[in-house]
Image (cartoon, rainbow, N blue to C red; front, side, top):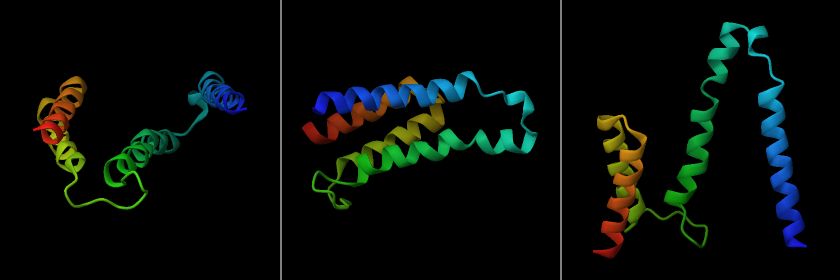
Length: 102
């Protein structure tokens, strides 16, 4: 039963993204709408990332002794200076692993 839910959710997720990208004509949009919609991925990204950093396994806010916060700050600094997504990802992962294992 769980697998049916996972498969149906995956199909619905794919269809909503595919249909919105394949049949959406951006030439009919005004420049203001294009500008506003260009910020949507950056607005959704923090909603995905921040709970993984600040919320612990019990669902409560974890600000003390949290190595993910320091690792994400290091990743942001690497990203700002390098402007390279792979350097940011690997730098953040390396910092996180260093903090939790050493």
